[in-house]
Image (cartoon, rainbow, N blue to C red; front, side, top):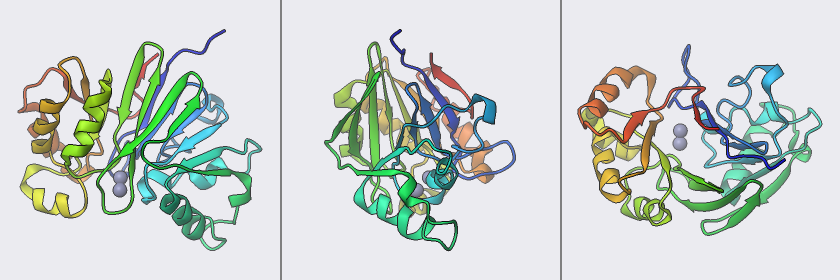
Length: 244
Ligand SMILES: [Zn+2]
Ligand SMILES: [Zn+2]
């Protein structure tokens, strides 16, 4: 039987707190995009062997589940920029913070422009503009495409890259409220005001799925997103099934 395109947002928060998990998407075919909720976003009984893990960047809220994916016999392939993979191997799996389990995964460097076949998905690596090297992933299966944009400050070239691929949905961050836009930009993040620019780039049919809200600012960010009054735009919640 052909596997269909299924996407579940396991975690979408910008920092962990009770009831809030950090970035991780589970795609059909045993694919994870980021590992922030890889360990605690699914009950053990519901877990599937992860064949491929796509990392956007090395920050802890996106990689903290990596050590827990290794050592159960599955031997996942871990894809990411060279700088991302080096950071995870050198600082997370270096034998100090966690046992050195790096030989229990296959490491696969990617760069923007790369295309990866992972049935039923075709994955394309794209840009992001963050404080450390970071990428976005366009995940396309028959009948459905979603852009999972990495942590980013607003950058027209990133928005244009997504728009040119005309996805059905685009998950993109608004980590901070507008009042601290300068700080958000310094930390390589966006605020709801930036989502107005995304709206101008993306097609009228593209769902804008807002993520990475910092828990301490969540009420403010929610109010500012609601004030945009755009039926295409909504804030994701942990565990939400986006497709399938
Ligand atoms: Zn980050
Ligand atoms: Zn992050």
